[in-house]
Length: 474
Image (cartoon, rainbow, N blue to C red; front, side, top):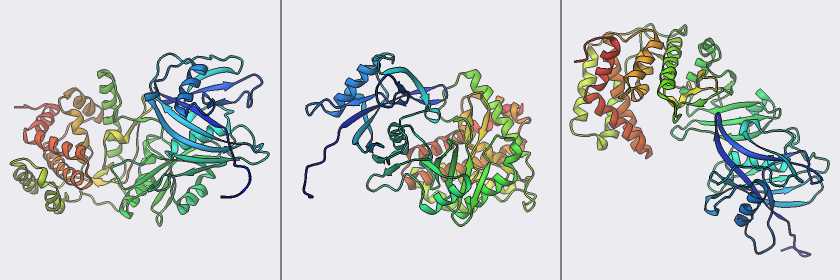
């Protein structure tokens, strides 16, 4: 221990109150006023711990009520991030930022002498000017780190300035960095300029990594590292060859590096349809729009080197997938799968079209104006058109109105051969999903695959196909 007087710093508490708005999560901010420090700047409702007998959670509950009128139960307070901050004048402090998603009351300005405005703001549209210290806490919270350091230099502005960003993120023990490695960061910054904030938004079920990156001027980009060269090649080819033809319904490829297996993409407006709560009428409109979008994808020009017929279905992987799925199969499931696959050898070859390859609700985004967009093209390849229907079938189970809406938008019904091929593709996808879910410890994937096999065996998929084709469903 070094000699001399022991260093002591003030302790702050900051409220990150989060609610779900019409276009995504929103955070509560207030604007400082009067003769206080940083007057005119936005920040979180916050304050100091009142002496050694008040803990930080009690202080947060007290400050929240005093500044906003909201009543918060201490049991609803969640740790977000701790920030060690030094201001431009050289004084330091430690701030505890807490997330709260439940409270009583409606927020209002309770201390008009030091606060003249209060409101809810989307995370991507916070107001300016904002206290740099508070903005550092917000970005560290979004990055998911437990601790951050924000030491400003003499002459730095009080307000957040992307050109003078002093935020340093400190990841938790045993965790990787909340941002990509140095080579990928440098690659991204060569493409879009200096990046001031990284947020890991990777999908938990894939080995590919995705970050939301904000540049110094506030622009938003996405940086993706693919899990292998094949996926990288597929996504880059799709983004170069046919996605631009969708007229803004997909992201723009900004840069690609085959050695890093990384891409930089423009941001795409909208929220995933997965988990979105819609009325029945809205659902039908959405699925009609999905059908229209899929029709546009399938009408895209094939790459010059693409084969004229769809590749052979991946029967070679069947034995491997069955081996992984077998412990979770029900009586007769394996025999049923083999009979379906063996019957497929009699199906005629079909014309290959451009396919997305992983068309499911999490890869379809709906903007505030209802516009539909699509992301994630690492499984895109020339295939049978029905390949893009496999992961939508769950949505049609018991909802023939959505099935009808989709095919109305798609512009045609499936042929008899396509219906037979769709059954084969669906069964193969179910078995591979069960095997993968079993290997990765994902019970949801296992259950989805088992549910799909049960539906297929009961004839539900064939019934739905005949219904939308206008034939006799008996």
